[in-house]
Image (cartoon, rainbow, N blue to C red; front, side, top):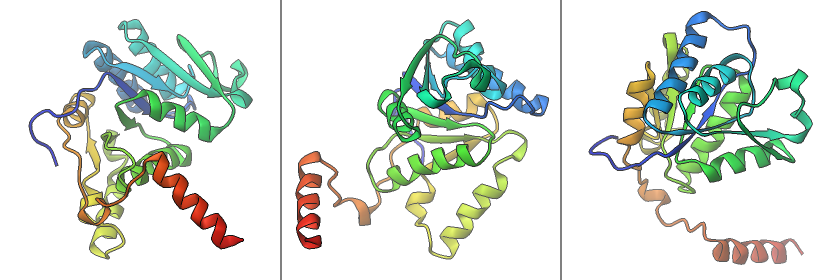
Length: 217
């Protein structure tokens, strides 16, 4: 669902792939996304890499004067694995800590074409949005129809009642960086009536945790 602009994006997380073995069109789109982020004065948070699509986005954003932060698990913080992080690097202990750190710093998310790691990250963020843990917009940059079948799967999940139509609207997709960022900025959070009563405050979660522990004992 979109409407008048409701979401100001200052920092964005881009999930992308480090492998350099990619079609030129995907590399071109990654580089262009970095340029568009810089033109719109949006800063980049990413996985901390200078190879493949990660390198394309981060180098272009940095050269365009965007601030760039790479979040890297310590186990992977070796240049022979990921290349050299563009600009600032923040090392964390685990992959989960990496995702949580990215989440904390950004206002929106974009997934480029990628593998299971990309899907895991974007669906993790998607599931949090479905549960109303956050209302940050989530987008797929659908270059050359890369995500067409995934989007069809989500539509099928709605038809077969494994996913609500409310949740389906959380995921935004577009073929170009300009279109996608426009949609992310105009995104209006989806409020699922069945989830509206959930309270994720620390105090309430702590009470529930204590109750669950007492039941286990």
